[in-house]
Image 1 (tube, one colour):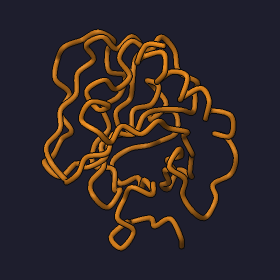
Image 2 (image 1 turned 60 degrees about the vertical axis):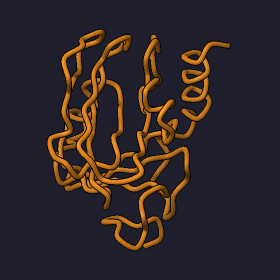
Image 3 (image 1 turned 30 degrees about the vertical axis):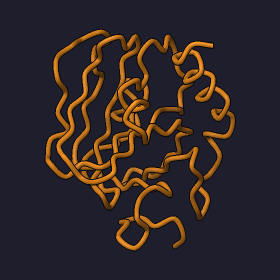
Length: 161
Protein backbone atom coordinates (compact mmCIF):
# COMPACT_ATOMS: atom_id res chain seq x y z
CA UNK A 1 0.00 0.00 0.00
CA UNK A 2 1.44 3.42 -0.93
CA UNK A 3 1.65 6.26 1.57
CA UNK A 4 -1.11 8.28 -0.15
CA UNK A 5 -3.37 5.23 -0.34
CA UNK A 6 -2.92 4.62 3.38
CA UNK A 7 -3.75 8.28 4.17
CA UNK A 8 -6.94 8.04 2.13
CA UNK A 9 -7.83 4.73 3.78
CA UNK A 10 -7.32 6.21 7.25
CA UNK A 11 -9.51 9.19 6.42
CA UNK A 12 -12.25 7.04 4.89
CA UNK A 13 -12.15 4.61 7.81
CA UNK A 14 -12.99 7.30 10.37
CA UNK A 15 -15.55 9.16 8.25
CA UNK A 16 -18.57 7.20 9.41
CA UNK A 17 -19.69 9.25 12.42
CA UNK A 18 -18.68 12.73 11.25
CA UNK A 19 -22.22 14.09 11.33
CA UNK A 20 -23.11 12.96 14.86
CA UNK A 21 -23.76 15.72 17.43
CA UNK A 22 -20.73 17.15 19.22
CA UNK A 23 -19.81 15.35 22.43
CA UNK A 24 -18.32 16.82 25.59
CA UNK A 25 -14.81 15.56 25.19
CA UNK A 26 -12.28 14.93 22.48
CA UNK A 27 -10.98 12.06 20.39
CA UNK A 28 -7.69 11.96 18.49
CA UNK A 29 -9.52 11.26 15.24
CA UNK A 30 -11.97 14.17 15.57
CA UNK A 31 -11.73 17.96 15.35
CA UNK A 32 -14.64 20.10 16.44
CA UNK A 33 -15.20 23.72 15.46
CA UNK A 34 -17.73 26.20 16.80
CA UNK A 35 -18.70 29.80 16.26
CA UNK A 36 -21.77 32.03 16.18
CA UNK A 37 -22.81 29.95 13.14
CA UNK A 38 -23.07 26.73 15.19
CA UNK A 39 -20.69 23.77 15.40
CA UNK A 40 -19.33 21.03 13.16
CA UNK A 41 -17.20 17.96 13.64
CA UNK A 42 -14.66 16.52 11.18
CA UNK A 43 -12.98 13.13 11.32
CA UNK A 44 -9.27 13.60 10.77
CA UNK A 45 -5.97 11.94 10.21
CA UNK A 46 -3.38 13.67 12.41
CA UNK A 47 -0.04 14.73 10.95
CA UNK A 48 2.15 15.48 13.96
CA UNK A 49 5.52 14.25 12.70
CA UNK A 50 7.65 16.15 10.15
CA UNK A 51 7.38 13.38 7.54
CA UNK A 52 3.59 13.20 7.92
CA UNK A 53 3.26 16.97 7.65
CA UNK A 54 5.45 16.99 4.52
CA UNK A 55 3.25 14.32 2.89
CA UNK A 56 -0.07 15.85 3.94
CA UNK A 57 -2.87 15.09 1.49
CA UNK A 58 -0.65 14.79 -1.56
CA UNK A 59 -1.88 12.28 -4.16
CA UNK A 60 -5.30 11.90 -2.50
CA UNK A 61 -7.87 11.80 -5.31
CA UNK A 62 -10.99 12.32 -3.22
CA UNK A 63 -11.92 12.78 0.41
CA UNK A 64 -15.24 12.15 2.18
CA UNK A 65 -17.11 15.38 2.87
CA UNK A 66 -16.66 15.80 6.64
CA UNK A 67 -13.11 14.53 6.91
CA UNK A 68 -9.72 16.16 6.75
CA UNK A 69 -6.21 16.27 8.08
CA UNK A 70 -5.01 18.09 11.19
CA UNK A 71 -1.41 19.30 11.11
CA UNK A 72 0.02 19.64 14.62
CA UNK A 73 3.26 21.55 15.24
CA UNK A 74 5.37 21.33 18.39
CA UNK A 75 5.14 25.08 19.00
CA UNK A 76 3.49 28.20 17.56
CA UNK A 77 5.27 29.41 14.44
CA UNK A 78 4.94 30.90 10.99
CA UNK A 79 3.70 28.24 8.56
CA UNK A 80 3.22 28.14 4.82
CA UNK A 81 1.65 25.43 2.66
CA UNK A 82 1.45 24.71 -1.05
CA UNK A 83 -0.56 22.36 -3.20
CA UNK A 84 2.17 20.56 -5.13
CA UNK A 85 0.99 16.98 -5.82
CA UNK A 86 -2.33 17.74 -4.09
CA UNK A 87 -5.15 16.72 -6.39
CA UNK A 88 -8.23 18.13 -4.64
CA UNK A 89 -9.12 21.74 -3.69
CA UNK A 90 -8.70 22.35 0.03
CA UNK A 91 -9.65 24.91 2.65
CA UNK A 92 -6.84 25.52 5.14
CA UNK A 93 -7.87 26.61 8.62
CA UNK A 94 -4.98 28.08 10.62
CA UNK A 95 -5.28 28.15 14.44
CA UNK A 96 -3.04 29.34 17.26
CA UNK A 97 -1.88 27.41 20.34
CA UNK A 98 -5.23 27.93 22.08
CA UNK A 99 -7.25 26.59 19.13
CA UNK A 100 -8.49 30.02 18.03
CA UNK A 101 -8.76 30.23 14.24
CA UNK A 102 -6.62 33.13 13.00
CA UNK A 103 -6.95 32.71 9.23
CA UNK A 104 -8.76 30.63 6.62
CA UNK A 105 -7.50 30.13 3.08
CA UNK A 106 -10.37 28.93 0.90
CA UNK A 107 -10.25 26.69 -2.14
CA UNK A 108 -6.51 26.22 -2.54
CA UNK A 109 -5.90 25.28 -6.18
CA UNK A 110 -4.79 21.69 -6.83
CA UNK A 111 -1.17 21.29 -8.02
CA UNK A 112 -0.38 25.00 -7.47
CA UNK A 113 3.10 25.68 -6.07
CA UNK A 114 2.26 29.19 -4.83
CA UNK A 115 2.97 29.48 -1.09
CA UNK A 116 -0.10 29.80 1.16
CA UNK A 117 0.94 31.56 4.38
CA UNK A 118 -0.87 31.02 7.65
CA UNK A 119 -1.31 34.75 8.16
CA UNK A 120 0.64 35.14 11.41
CA UNK A 121 3.63 33.78 13.27
CA UNK A 122 1.67 32.05 16.04
CA UNK A 123 0.10 29.12 14.19
CA UNK A 124 0.29 25.68 15.81
CA UNK A 125 -2.60 23.82 14.13
CA UNK A 126 -3.77 23.65 10.53
CA UNK A 127 -6.92 21.81 9.53
CA UNK A 128 -7.30 20.90 5.86
CA UNK A 129 -10.83 20.11 4.67
CA UNK A 130 -12.50 19.89 1.28
CA UNK A 131 -12.49 23.19 -0.59
CA UNK A 132 -15.56 25.36 -0.03
CA UNK A 133 -16.68 23.82 3.25
CA UNK A 134 -15.31 26.62 5.45
CA UNK A 135 -17.50 29.13 3.63
CA UNK A 136 -20.47 26.74 3.55
CA UNK A 137 -20.39 26.37 7.35
CA UNK A 138 -19.26 29.91 8.22
CA UNK A 139 -15.83 28.92 9.55
CA UNK A 140 -13.57 31.98 9.75
CA UNK A 141 -11.24 33.94 12.00
CA UNK A 142 -12.52 33.75 15.57
CA UNK A 143 -13.91 30.22 15.22
CA UNK A 144 -12.86 27.92 18.07
CA UNK A 145 -11.23 24.56 17.35
CA UNK A 146 -10.83 21.73 19.84
CA UNK A 147 -8.73 18.59 19.77
CA UNK A 148 -6.80 16.69 22.48
CA UNK A 149 -3.45 17.87 21.06
CA UNK A 150 -4.25 21.43 22.24
CA UNK A 151 -2.94 22.13 25.75
CA UNK A 152 -6.18 22.02 27.70
CA UNK A 153 -5.15 24.53 30.38
CA UNK A 154 -4.94 27.26 27.70
CA UNK A 155 -7.55 26.07 25.20
CA UNK A 156 -10.34 28.47 24.17
CA UNK A 157 -12.61 25.41 24.00
CA UNK A 158 -11.32 22.67 26.32
CA UNK A 159 -12.22 19.04 25.77
CA UNK A 160 -14.05 18.86 29.10
CA UNK A 161 -16.26 21.83 29.83
